[in-house]
Image 1 (cartoon, one colour):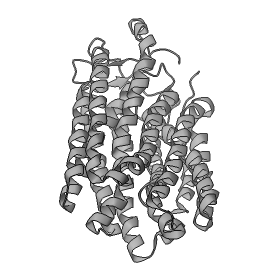
Image 2 (tube, rainbow, N blue to C red; image 1 turned 180 degrees about the horizontal axis):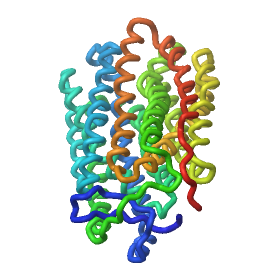
Image 3 (tube, rainbow, N blue to C red; image 1 turned 120 degrees about the vertical axis):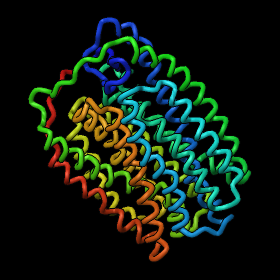
Image 4 (cartoon, helix red, strand yellow; image 1 turned 120 degrees about the horizontal axis):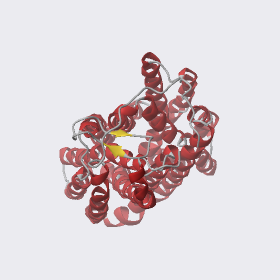
Length: 417
């Protein structure tokens, strides 16, 4: 399994497949593959740092434009639903014809979205800016996930975890940057972060130059079903189960990402900046958990990691609504470490179920994650307006119980590692 992985394409019209069989000519790419993996992870860090700014400046937007929680949820929906709707489309298209420079072009959408958000003075313009950032995410994730697998050397869970690590730490940086820069200097300071998008464009253009020959010089190997693998019916059931598991995980994380600041302010009376630091602690724990989940899946099997990571968080999510301020911080760390470790295993599990539609499956699952977060944020915001933020967290505490559905996942053939 420690062989280089080659993405190849037949006349650039057939589905692009990440093969487990490594031609000898690809061995030359084994050395720089990990450099590329680090580069795509760092780009994920930059991408998600910029995206996380949206949720982190919600208190500023709420106070400045007198928004209610439902309108805050709609901003999240505009951002995440755009990404959810387009990611599977992008993934399906790049399965047929890979676009090595699409990543840098998509990042330009994030660049302009941030500039527009910094200058927006109307609610509709804020929604458009959020949607542009979501468009950049839709282009970025499916193809960058393919590049991460290409650079994995066969350690798919590890590669997905490194890729997720960049995104998770990027997400955690948003609240800190908002507390240090946006809160003191105002909405206009968001424009400064467009320079991060400019850096990401340059890195992704270089990665595109490495990626291009990988998809144009080799003839695609035919795809065969794995011996002993699940039937097509079981594959369909397993994909639905994985979507449900991602639903439980992502909706809970979205509830904390979007409303944890308001929850801490409302219940404990802390300042906005202090609440943003607490949100950073939770998101940083998510990043650490996301990194370790993939290698654990490579070592012990993805199904067992999925079981433990979702159900294991349940006792702590049930306790969180009744904890004090400092206990809430400790519980949020434990929850973040446990529940985020499932992301890499869910995505790689789905990719292994349908290897001939790698881009589309990656787009669907990344898109579902964004879409569920956006739709859930809007619904939870409406619920918070009619009840309270505290009640929202009491309801969300039961979401990890959906992890029981993991019993319906098939056992996949194991490879030597």
